[in-house]
Amino acid sequence: MFTYINNLAGKWVCLDGIAIFFAQYLIYFLVAGAILFFFFIKKQERIRYLILIASSVILSRLVITELIRLFWHRSRPFVDYSVNQLIEHSASGSFPSGHITFLFPLATVIYFFNKKLGIAFFIFSFSIGLARIFVGIHYPFDILVGIIIGILSAMILRLGVWRNWYTRTTQNRMDASP
Image (cartoon, rainbow, N blue to C red):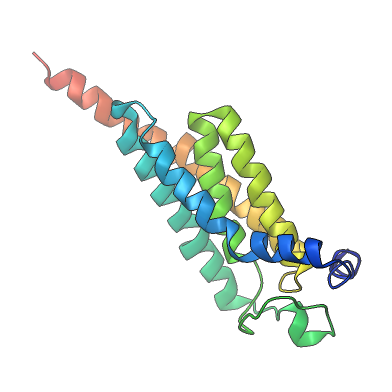
């Protein structure tokens, strides 16, 4: 599958340009969109949104991804094979994709607050993953595992630890009120 997607690179200047933009720069627009979305959430939900995004991204990207990379190093495609590499990248480990393990918990949390916007974030995040395969710096499995880690991190925190903490905090406020 990697070869099929990556073999499309270098054939059409326009498609290459779009893929390079998606692989390198679209992430900044998504982060800006997530920050902007913060201002459209009800004031009483803003802290919950920030904590859920921060904890999901930290768990997915900084904890799980780095633990996996500590025990299992997978070279990037351009290190092991002759590929159509359209962007420069260090030869650091590729598994799982750091971009995707950052973007998918972000998209998942936004989905919890706004389904339509969340779906748009999922589509753009997935497009970034495809673009990173296209430009020759990730394998499809790097992206797939990153998606799973990202979504599960946000879901676990929302349904598990976060829900328990939020319920206790709300209950404590209700108990303390006159």
